[in-house]
Length: 144
Image (cartoon, rainbow, N blue to C red; front, top):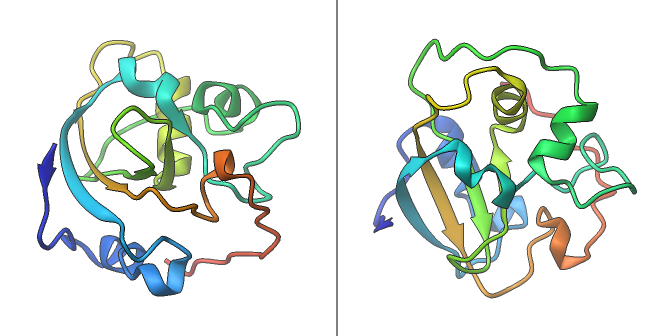
């Protein structure tokens, strides 16, 4: 992991990194990870939001993919998922890229996944990290 001083490489990243407005702990330290691979998928969790959460699991990406409707993956432009967790061991919540990561998890491309990811780490609880036991009842609507 490479620690980032300024991880805001895109406007979406900038939006998520505004921690005070997105319920991400203010002490979150951001890292650039090269590379996120399919072997890391068991450590990934979909965001803690009513549209992604089921009482039947803990939002594990591969379980979410089984109940999701996204069926294909085509990387058309450069993109980096934004992940968040408590430490390097995981688990990591997908803050940005839930649809793409779910589709990628369902794809037949079993070996060719190598993504650069932005990963935030903090010891404090985060609303979006289901493992922290917080309930996300707020409807979140994005206009991008």
